[in-house]
Length: 217
Image (cartoon, rainbow, N blue to C red; front, side):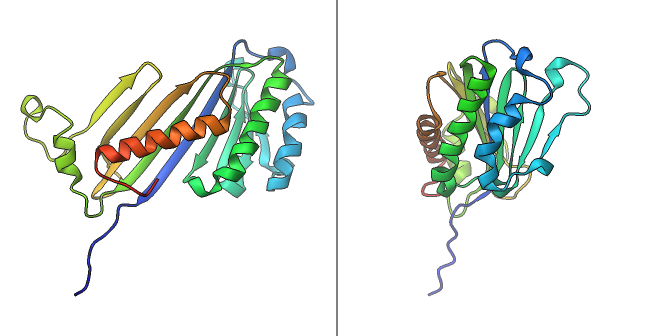
């Protein structure tokens, strides 16, 4: 007999890290840019060259100024502002975490060193489009919300806000038979990327588990 079962799958994902200094490092911002000088030794081994660096030409205020670095090898980008560091990845995979975690820790350390202070706040946001496969996600969602109060619907969603972040889960508008999940967590400033990644992975497993999806994070 042919087995027509299908497994859930992550079709799209996005990750963004944001680390913010206690006060903007305006005095460290200039040409030649010390952030470029400090970061490049860690980025060059991953194929980053001068052609991958640019400044925001449309900035009208100091808050809009940033250095953009394309991290093509990992389908990502780094933005360095006078007061914050942002790292974003499109469709990241946990398999490359052993490479990315030490790299991001190095970038974070350089940002703090050049900025002349430690990061005062940091957070990570992850967004996922996940197919359901053979899992009856709609039934799972009904058990997580008050359907009597909400009334009949094709699908349901929810958001839960915590002191250190939030999770939201709803139907994907980009893919059929799929859910859109967003996870945000704020971390204490002293945590490194290895520690944050461990907590983030646990969050991802827990949220997927709410709708009966396992083994794909």
